[in-house]
Image 1 (cartoon, rainbow, N blue to C red):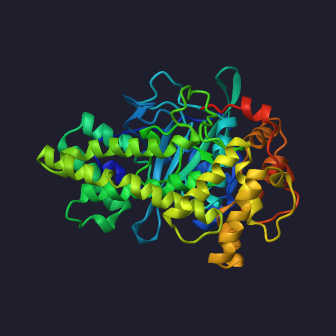
Image 2 (image 1 turned 180 degrees about the horizontal axis):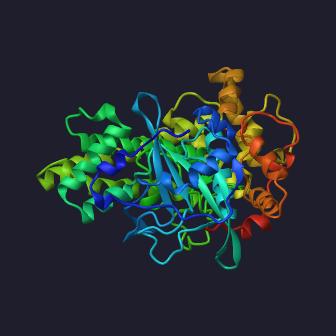
Image 3 (image 1 turned 90 degrees about the horizontal axis):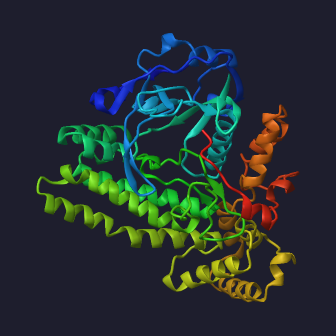
Length: 475
């Protein structure tokens, strides 16, 4: 069972509001993550998890978080409009994990919403978050999807759903923006101390803890987004309220994975100007980190000018750190261990060819990872063939081919949750057939391994389907 604590409630009341989840008329388990249950030794059966989640006697301290955020560049007050933390599950060594119900009903911050979520969108978040975890990318996890037994009005009436989400913390850049805009200096200090003690206790004795927190979060977010770029992931809504201080990917609304390589690619129906396009993600995370730095200015130093200079000294390192980590990752994808500046053009040239020829991002890198490269559609482009010869010559000259192939296989997945496949299996599941969904979920647990019977998951959609495909918030 859960071992709940409520340390977040030690923060000033402006950061949270005690909130009970809405009752579900006829709740039933739609998806249950048995591996996650076993990992944390929760000993939860399907009946027990429903008893725990929907017994209001368990919710004397459940709460929604208050925060703000920049959404598509515009600042606004927000808060958990459809999410309620039912407790912090305590692990060994005083570590804790938020257990949150998403789609659990109205909160103080719901504004004009109903606080509910569609079953369809919660299945999607379950699937994508688990895929990200097995792709070795820091992510929220999904413990279960509950079919609520009620109808939710969106464009049409849809089945309602509740996601049981687990994260190290739901504190986000927007939480700090809220403290800075609407709180006192003490509120900001309290939030910063709490965050450091909970997530990064090793920096608590730093000469300047707020500055150390800025530096730590910046580096961890760079690592996270570099990993997104590694697998072709587009978050789709990189607002500051969706940027976690724990550097976990979360809020999988209009997210997607690119098929053919295109840095300008956008799938989100609400991203009309391409702000969060695949290739813009490095710029956006830097922009978000700048907003985080601005929030911390009042407590970095009493002298505002000095505080700005100190924060800027951290931000000024972003571009060089990003470039180093990004090219190191991309060079690993083509089997090169060393990160020499002279090799960066090898990556740039490959990506340019891939973009011009609409080459599939995932399959191109997996093709290069093979021990014996067969003749395929990749061999038909003369520029790619010339690039491949140049790359092969460098590999043979500078490193062991076997070792290069091994590092490539660790960094290049065979299978990703392709957008059209995700939609197809969810549609079947909504119509009562969960076999395809369970098959895909199983395949996604081993994305770097060859598996039988997954050809349908590795085949890109035709160009027309990909061009027309859109993702939606959907909750």
